[in-house]
Amino acid sequence: MTTHRILVIDDKRDAVAAIQCVLELCGHEVDVAYDGAEGLERARHVSPEVILCDIGLPGAADGYQVARALRASDEFRSTFLVAVTGYAGEEDAKRAVAAGFDMHLAKPVDIHILLRLISERFEDGPE
Image (cartoon, rainbow, N blue to C red; front, side, top):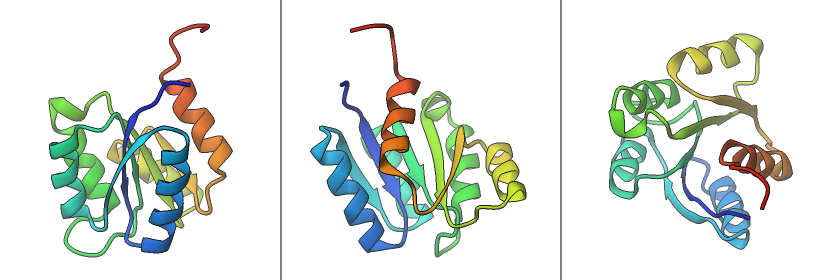
């Protein structure tokens, strides 16, 4: 399995710690941020290949704003950007995609599905 640089942006510290632990056990390099502004700063610093971002973030930038800001930068146009959120309605999913997210996953996320989606995104043929 190929490993990736992953940034998790979520204000729920327990949820962040749990997903960080699982992703690191799978060999991924994981960085974290707890609000939108910090997430944008960390993204620019670590250049992640994958960003898992909550929508309902505290502070001036929610997840939709984070996605729009990232997609406005050439550096993050190809980053795999996944909304991981409690905002799980059909309209929420449409709004997430419109903001620039590649995927919209409702919490709690099945880690096996998440790992499969990451693997499939970067799949470059049989090993």
